[in-house]
Image (cartoon, rainbow, N blue to C red):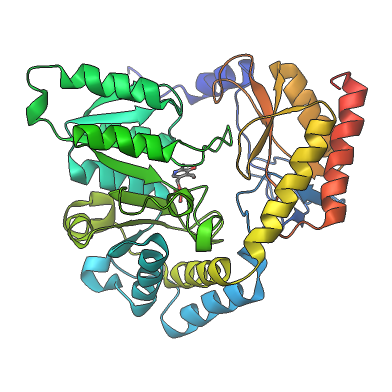
Length: 402
Ligand SMILES: Cc1ncc(COP(=O)(O)O)c(C=O)c1O
């Protein structure tokens, strides 16, 4: 009989041959240090005997093992339940969700917020629910934005990364078309870009959008909790009134799981009705909502953000003083190596020195720009930062990269 199945073995071999096969390496806990297990496939993982310093996590504020956050999750599990049990529209809407959404709306200077089960679901659900005719999208936007554009079946115009001039010229070009006046336009960008550490020029983007009446949507996944009063770049730049849709994840600085959208009452009501990833998905688990609420409270009302930014400055200075090129202007420190083999060797070398910081290679980043993505946390102490820098210096010297 004819085989109509899928040749998975050869797909995996192709990935292996191209050096693109991904593997899972479990760690004993999510924190600034931990014991990792080598990839073991379906076998039970065996944790390494040495503890590694983690400079690879998006747990930027180090709140995943904060007692207050743990207690909030525990209490929500005990009083509300471990899972939402149904879509929010059925019986899965709880006071814990409402408390989180109220706090998110307040932080984001928005009328209302809505929690999704992930940032991915928030992006895909929001873009598809809006049904834009044309989307203007930064070339380095996150995969969940790209998938949202595809699923919305909108015409997507991609502009050069963080380039407001290119955006303006693409808006003007489109506006010159005869049928353009009938179209709805959505302009979408990450605020902090995960692989480059760059920050989008949001004010110039809002100017460009306003000149054409387009709506602006900003994905603050890597910024939420880290900037002014625990908000994102939108708050740091005072743009809440000019950004129609503020979106993000609860899974990075907010030490939990889930996503959110903040905006007008009408926007949120539309999403409650039309965002399929909200309507047809079980509500966010109450312990995740409660953990995110508590983490956001800590981000807003403590010095935890300052500790992160001090670590970022120390680490950036140290890496640059070795002669390494560090991109961006955020908490993400991408160290440019260039050649993919050198990047892999550098990541391996620092790993042998018990520092975890991954090599990022093509196709994730453009050819010739392979890098190590270094992400400090607020909970790293001075010794941890020094140990990370020493691992880079020793490995860089050994490989002749410094
Ligand atoms: C910019 C951006 N948007 C959205 C997401 C998706 O968020 P989540 O992990 O909550 O699905 C991520 C990361 O995972 C991201 O980096």
